[in-house]
Structure formats: C-alpha cells, structure tokens
Length: 509
Image (cartoon, rainbow, N blue to C red):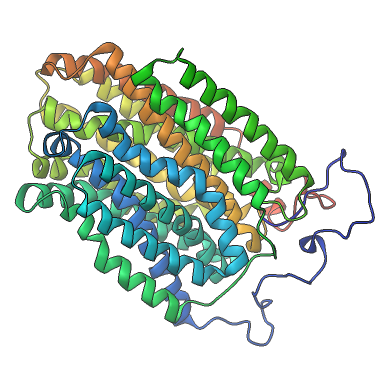
C-alpha cells in the first residue's frame, strides 16, 4: 500500500503530497492495460503463477513438516516442551515481525529481485536447520528461515496481482491456495517418510533443490516491478518489528514463566506502546509502510480480522493434532502423515473451486461458512478425543475442519488484495500475512498453555485431557472468526469499492 491517507486530523501544508495520490513521479513499473508494451506474454504470466505458488508452497511446507517431527525432535535433540514450541514459533515470530518489511523491500528494490533473494535466504537457512546439532541451534536457524519466508510470502500475492487482471485474479489466487494447500498436505506425509526412513535433518534438506530452482528461475523469467514508495520507512520498520516482537514474545514465554511475571507484563506493555508509536508515525510518514486509510475499507479490515482467528485455531490445532496422532493414538510419523491427509489435503481440492466461485458470488459466503465449518470440526474433534479413541472417530471432524479452512484461504487473500490498488498489493498482502502469522503464534502459545493447565505428557489419558481443552479453545476462536467474517461486504459492494482508494473522494468505507 502506498497511499498516504487523508484523515480529518491531518493539517493541510505545503509539503508535496505522496506520489501515489496523483503524482506520477514514482508510479510502479506496470504498463497501463492496452498501452504499448502493456500486454503480458502468456508464458510469463504462467511462470509468474508457478513460481509464486512454489514460494508459498515452501513457506507453508516448513510449518507442517516440523509439526510432524516434534516428537522425534524432542527425543533426538532432548528438547523441552518450550523448545519444541519455539521450533514453530521462532519461525512464525520472525515471519510475523518482518512481513511488512519484506513487502516494503520489494516495493523499493524491485519485487523480482527481492523475491529471488528471499527464496535464497530461506534456502540457506534450511541448510542451517539441517545442520543443527542442538535445539537452540535449530531454533536460531528457524528464525532466519522465518525472515526469508517473510520476504517471500507477501510478494507471492503481489506478483500474481501484477500479472493477472482483476477478473482472473480470483481463479489465480485459487491455484495459489491449492499449491499452498499441497505444501500443507504433503508436509505430514513427507515428514513421516523422511523421519522414519532417513533422518529428521532431511525435512530441511528437501527445501534446497526447490529453493535454488525457484530463485534462479525468478531472476530469469519474472517481470520486474516496483511499488510507489521510493524510500524505506526505517522508523516504521523499527517500531513495527520491535512492537510485534514484544506482543508475540509474551504469549510464547507465558507458559514457562507465567502470565503474571514481570517479563510477560513488560513485553506486553512495551509491545503495545511501540505499536501505538508505529501507528502514530504512519499518520505522519511521507511514505508509510502501512497507510492506515485502508483499515477504513471494510473488506480489508474484516479479512484481516478473520485471518487472525483462522490461523489462531489452525496453527494451534496443528501443533496439538500431530502430537495427538502419535502420542494419543499411537501412530508412527509416517502413519500420522498419511492419516492426517483427510485434513491437510482439503485445500488442494477445495481452494481452487472456492477461489473461482468467489469471483461470481463474492468472498463473504466462503469466509463465513468456512470459519463455521472449522469451528464445528474442531469442537467435534474435542468431543470425541479420548484415551480409547480410534482413527475412525476423528476422520469426520478432520474432513469438516479441512473443508472449512480451504474455503477461507483463497477468499481472504482475494478480499485483501482486491481492496487496494494493484500497486499496493505487496503491503496489503504483507499486512494480511503479518496478522495471519501473529494469529498462529498466539494460537500455539495459548493452546499450549491450555494443554499444560489441563493435562500433560505423563500418560495417554493425561495428554487427551489437555488436548480436549485446547481444541475447545481453538473451536471458539474459529467461531469468533466466523462472526467477524459476517461483517464483510457483499459481492456488489466489493465490485463498487474495488477501483477506489482510501482517502480519495468516495473511496472511504
């Protein structure tokens, strides 16, 4: 997003307006439709979708594949519950804190170049993860890997938005969602095969050939483009990164040191103050990282609220369910990966259809129904989980939850990038992914805390007791997401608002 929003509290001065409000000094490198050179070759458009989807595939795969390996990592690296949590949240923490920065880097230095460098960083960090000999070393490498992912993921949607016209964008994002879902689906199976038949290190080595290929091809075949901001908002980068770090540090550390500890209270207070400072700075900055006017667009705000609750329940449940299959039901990693496909494979099947249909009937029906199905599925799972539960009892809940999340993935993404001008899609996607990853971090932290308060690893019965309590909380979060999604604009409102910008006449919802 590149527009400096006009608000009632902003005084009129002689300072030249931000270029994206009318000036052409820093317009993005995107030819106008129909202009000379404006037509994109079909092959380049296809390559854009393939390479952007593969980047999303890598970043999603590494969340799920590590979740499957948690019991093995606990034994091989003698990791504590807190260290196991950090192998997921170290990645998600860097992901959440640096997402807006990654989007801004793409706008400033070129999206193709930045995307290729982000994939390269992710690949190098994967090598470091595979080479780690201790839990702290693995966690450190995962943080760097999350930083690379923070550059890659928001630019995947930006590249697609730049390559496809509005009327075809929903279907393209549906394909993007399906490939992302493929990473989620393959993660448990691939992790199970690798852990059982080779070694846990290879869950990271498998990223390397894919990452090298994507980085090289992106440099060669993608079209370069830039956003409207000629400068990085370094003050905004510092404020938002440290503020988010404080807010997500607190729930990650709370299960170990207590919610009332000085460390947790100080982290929450510092995070809140720094984020308030970031918001204040964005109102003054000439080239803001996050033009706040977009939050006055109902579709943009609702999509971000929905995605927070979506990943809160999804990633928190992923942390618990992969362990439940192994510690509660007694399956090995490969058996777990195969049996969990009824949940994780759903995005491959449903996301493309939901993305395509959303262009005809709007995003809201899919967002609302999808979150409701996720809530029903997770609550159903909590009700049937017990020490004597068999696989047949959990198949139905997992299918229902999987179909639900598959409907939300592409439609939330489409709602976000459709609410802003195409040149601002990077920051829109970065904002959405920041909120999404923050939701995942909070989900893991809160569900772990609920699990520890109601059960433990001492016996199957104790584990299932904690698991049931955690999944009830996850279901409640999904239901809250459905309530937020009800506020989304309908199809006609989406179409009417699409060409307008916040801060311009008629552009504020």
